[in-house]
Image (tube, rainbow, N blue to C red; front, side, top):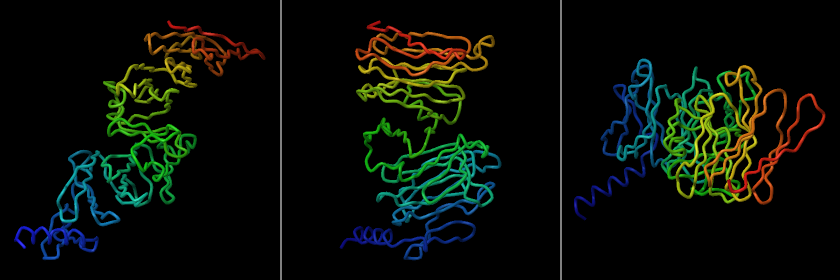
Length: 360
């Protein structure tokens, strides 16, 4: 056996037998102690205003650790890395201008999943929650929301104000991890390259980075670090995806999955959207805009029915001002006419009204 082969064999054996018990702290630094007593430096024990973390994966094939990234107050910001137990293969995963107080692994569906977020006071609540899939090497879930409770693999996420229970949602990590990078029949996952949006169990919305939103909606430039996907609807032929994102204001986008590009974007600073309905031929989409304070101070309760013809790139609208309600939207079987129910608040009766689109 050549010296090179012997050295390679020794490295392989060392990699297989290294475990968390081989992690030592000396001179305020984390090291891995190899079988030949060689020490491999991993990360300092303390940097800036906080302590770093080092954790082994369940199968001991990798370890994750944090280091200061130069961001945040008194350098409290942290970056997350992974490497093999012998210190090789160091890979950057993520960085943020906040401390990371929780860093641990889970074994789900045969995959090693890394979970990290910043907590406070040593308790199991915090914010900026992220889940990393080691096998596919990408983040599968991330949110800037607060974590208010944890039960096993399930987390209750919400706003900073815990009393605002209407905005809380439960996300279970195991439902965020797909066995393969494929779209399930229920349309709950949308894939474009390495960008994945997961609608987890009981999650009313999906939270992802603004950069991920740019990837999906083209060159839209959000003015916030995080973007909240508040609605998403696939077309009947499953080729088009309509998204509504909260980026400090609302953004509507239609993404052509076949062309892998955004084909429509609409910024709506003073509105909320509801009742998205695709036509049967997947060429048109209709929705209702509800205008809030700031759009029209004389008629703050204005509503608008909007129809987009994606083939002709035309936009049809019908606006109503005053006290009334616009109810269900329905397309005719030939996809040429949109029907909606209009009801004045002072009346006991409603009226079915049409918007004829045809081929226009």
